[in-house]
Image (spheres, rainbow, N blue to C red):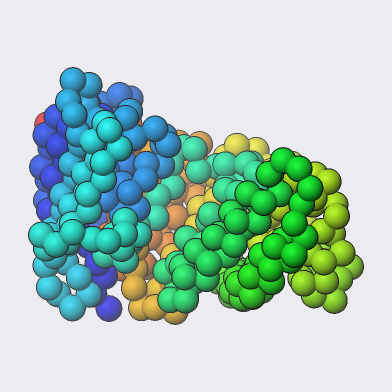
Length: 368
């Protein structure tokens, strides 16, 4: 398998990176620098090129270098068939977005994710363990987007029906139950497909996770997952019946209370919720186990490998598990970008395993 990888990366007016250009190694790239130097910004720029979104902030204005009007990220990527494609993304302070591939404008930013698939694990990613259900839903949906071709259309259809129903519920005055029932039917049509996709995906992911976690020092604790669909399936014969019986409750509370948009994923450590009993370091270890299991599952199903953006990997990770994670990364065909504060934190545990690598030192927003 020939994975997608970045052959060239050029970043312009992105945070403190005025203009930075590098030729990454096709396997592992260590980005070294003190806090505030710009190392995380390099990883963040690749994430933006992949998804149109930052993993650090929802406010895109913060990404544009102070005193400038827009930011641009450009890359030459080598596709699975060996062809080289130029991909670019720009956004200005007024919210204007432009995404291009080989000079042609893309209709949707989501098209970038197919061209430049990437998975980021940064210091805020522990919210996948600690945070609310929406973070874990997004994690499941990232995986489904890359392994199930019908997923995106199903997701859009469900979200459209959900917005229409919510708009009706929030209108002042008496509710039109006939219209609400119509949108309930649309929610059922697309919601049941979405729920089935998620359930099957989590089932497959749990199987892969067993193999990943066996390679980590989990102190004899098993990691497991339980998918929660967003409505009490045990209480109702169908999603349709649940929505029909709870229509008056939703009208009273003026909200869409049941469905895949309220789904969650319980992540368990030895049978107990990880977020309740694990230390910060253990949570990071569980996070890596689940996310790398998603990568392994993507490779298994699609024969495609995403680019990995691992911000400050050595932090809060003991030496034995750094070695274990390096072993997992070594056996994956992914191109990786790994940031760290200094070379000492990666020497030995990471560099001894990830021998095929390049190392870039960043100071004050420039490569040294």
